Length: 368
Image (cartoon, rainbow, N blue to C red; front, side):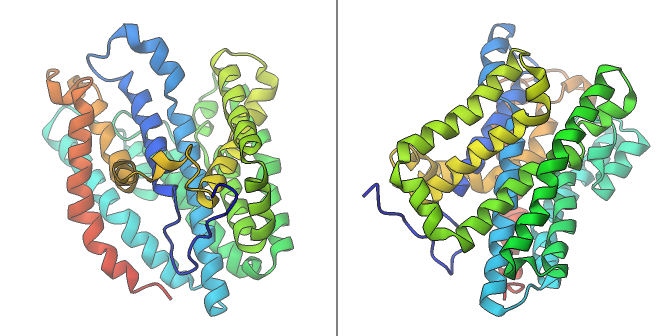
């Protein structure tokens, strides 16, 4: 029944609908990247610009990541009385680094064997997960978001342990309020420096400080689910259509205003955080009410499969939507629109089944 919440099993780290939301997120990214691919029809530019927004997709990824990481760590604390940073970083390293290292290695081969080149500063950013603070480069520019994630992984679990936040909810609220308050100021500063054509503004646009409030929204959701579950389920299920409508409005209104370049004084500092809270409401409602017909597609097998592949898709897709001339190639079906999507998915499947999946059992050894 619609009014009966579905509690995520306490011994399961795979919550309903999350893989489906990952699929939505990666679709937003791929749709925007289509516009830069060889052979993209100019007639599709306007509808694609409105339907697909990679920045929104990345923010969705950040919210999911903040939620899931915090949810797992809080559950670990509740189950064992502690959080093992050693085990956490071992799990993250096994999850992120093999595919990431393979991608950077392929970039090295491309730089050696083709005309493709990257500046030394870009290589430094790629190798140190600081790409969010340096100029973006073709083919590896998307790694800025992985840098933001890695900086989050480095900071947030340590704060959880250092200040005992997993067992002190009110203290956690205070700590999580800091990014929510500061991020709008960083976004305004980035906008103003970009407006005045300073180099710093271009770099800072993608910095951790412009996006850490989206990660924070995910963290807040995890604490609500873990500590205020009954209240949360009541809010999300008592009038589900009202929650759904409010969430959609919170996402679409700032989105539309940004696309039309309206109300910039509000949209620049606050538009993304309003949209983040809107998505968070949808995400939590889809976890609590996965059988609500609106959310059922998120749990279709093929949609979940795309979500499972989303990390590998995100890593590898940039090679195939980059202009072929970067590698001294002519456009072919596999490196042009829309064929590049097929080759990107094929590369992701090879990566997932060849690199990611074989390490699942090893990662399980670092779960308490």
